[in-house]
Length: 338
Image (tube, rainbow, N blue to C red; front, side):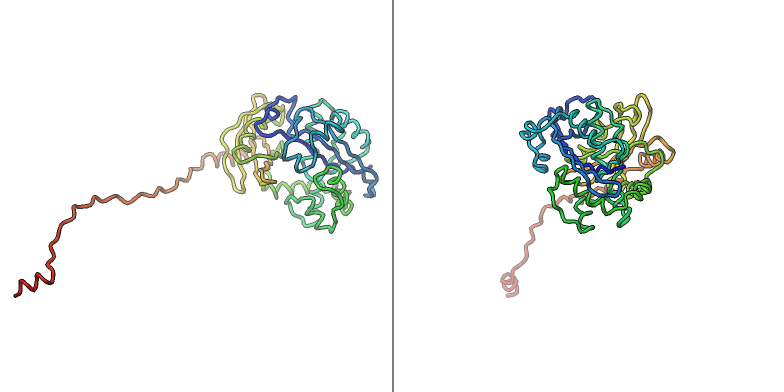
């Protein structure tokens, strides 16, 4: 058995652009433009590296923000990038059969599987996957909070030697962190680490959760909730488009709504918004209509709205006409007395 430490960079369409509105075979939040990976032995020794550039087919023009962050330009992808099916085949062959994937965060493996689905490729070879960040938290400070890779490196006194926001560079630094973890032990206790993360980020997870996803790059709350009610509002069972009702506010920038699928019925969606790189990140949980989540939703929907007490302006008093008073001066008083 071997560990494959994976990191990727992906392109995203600019909100409102033609690419953002383009119909896709299945949902895909980002199109992969670079894959970087490090192979680590069962004894947690670095053994090999992999890197490949990919020429995007759907989101063809690089997002300015992504290009600035990664240094990946359209010209570089045209010159050195290969099509995704070829890149995926090369990567899968390099990984081999007996491997476990580790990523820093939830997003990379989800994006990889979304890309495989869009191109009609099989994804079963990615099934054995773990979030190294959760293992790190469980074996260090025990927190459920998300940590940047740079923070983990600082905590372990690891000096960066490669570029950040480069797929292979980030994979290599993640591997250095993983070398200092007890990976076999962390994988055995992974379910408890996931629960600690969910409780830390979302609050205590209610029973009946059937779907979890993370989304990035929204300009404001309106755009984020609009996407969660619209194109990203997919049924966790059939993948079809769902309709959604009003969002009700909970503590900690959390929001809850009721969604409906014509095929599979009602679900409840709970999201949390967080600032990330001058934009909003959305973490979403989808629940079956259990008694507990229905009770929470009903309580919110029936809660009376608090109205601000309107300040009344004091009534305007109509001024009376000014009376002209004749006040005798001291000279007139003297004349009268003489």
